[in-house]
Image (cartoon, rainbow, N blue to C red; front, side):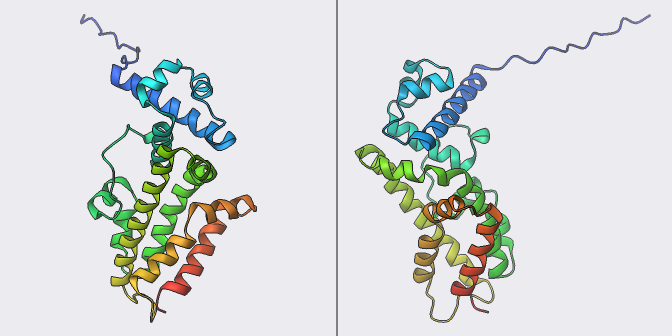
Length: 228
């Protein structure tokens, strides 16, 4: 009789890289929670290390400064901490190839036949990001007292403007196009002012549900930016 092979039920040991990534995500999740709850100045590296269950030296070895940690927390909040794989080269959000690579909603957005349909896809994806990233708004504003953290905030705003400009250029090419008299620059400025983390978080703090904010944004931006 042939001997039956035993099937091992042991989990495959994790690699060093996998363990390091788990630790990094745990640190980012802890930092996100503390930054949102207490702000930038009152959140210490010691508190983050304690919350994450790592040594303070590990924190400094991995991120070097609190501002650098904040920068990666923002990136992880945009992408999702559970899917974060570590820092990558700076993303130019005006670059279509990079937008396709880093945002799951961008390809369906480009594929939409009409400007109204594309705007809805963009806002659905964008609101998902805002839901995670908007709570960091007050932290980012407060952190501008730190020159390095101020640079993080300013670069983030430049990238957001670039992304919105790319989105508006695509909307303008889909029927029925932009409203009469609305240029790509003007539409970008309106989108930049209205679809901001500040506006989103303000409405959420007023008790609006996520879908209510998305519906309001869609109706308002469709009316003011797109032809009918």
